[in-house]
Image (cartoon, rainbow, N blue to C red; front, side, top):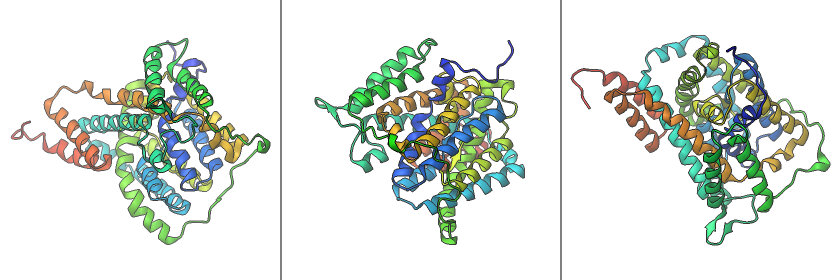
Length: 400
């Protein structure tokens, strides 16, 4: 059967929505809390989706850089500091990719470490999904509400997010293999309906609707102190996680899902792709962007099988950014946080299950150690320790 690069059907649309649980909370928070430009941010996401889909010819995820996003939100960093991190990450990835350093890193990264990164990322996604449902994510805590944009916060003694999450989870399980009513599409539509029924603040600003082109350099160029701070606080903690999850684990999963169709998805090209995305995001005031194994698992689990899903979600983001402008946040506020949590839980479980092809006890030991370190510290530390442990554990005198 001949492979089709682009399909535009219900499954591709559903799959294109699968990673909104990762993307939207960080993107919205970085607009509301850090003051990033919403037009530039969502337009850059849309363009990145479209161009990577066209180039790689398969489903390609687009995600925020989570270490940078989480720390920037928690400490209310300025746009200049965040933009400095985008430029530095872009330069770092370009150097690692073009010099071939990423291939050297891949050569000395055991398969057990790749699986450990995938399991750990999956566990983090599941944990984040549960937090969205019960109202304990950092964004919800900052807003002091489980569902910040709903008027109704509880149904009897139970938080409304828990009710929405449980119903959404059951609906997803019911429809996960249904091609007529794809789970990803139905769950988002159900979420929008729930948001309207439960009193979401609908503020699209239709009177202001028009063409809002992104501005070039909407913020002043970062100063030397911004670059210094961004390097040590954001880039150095983010880079190992990006190389582990957004490059090595992502390319491995892409080949597992798409086989020869993923021939273009090489470590080097993925580094260059992310570098260019961050340069573009820097120019129009967006956030640091990457690919990621979790994002690919999300898109794939909910039905994406071709680059058509990239074009669907990419043009949707770009169109909404251009038409709604700064009011785009009001549209996304219709989706309850608990619904995004449901998407995260299923995406995380899909990614975590990649470990089932490991049978060697030593390999499994490395995987669970990386998971433990990730939960206690962060994925970057887990990845670095995992590489060292993966080589050390091969010594015959060591046993587990």
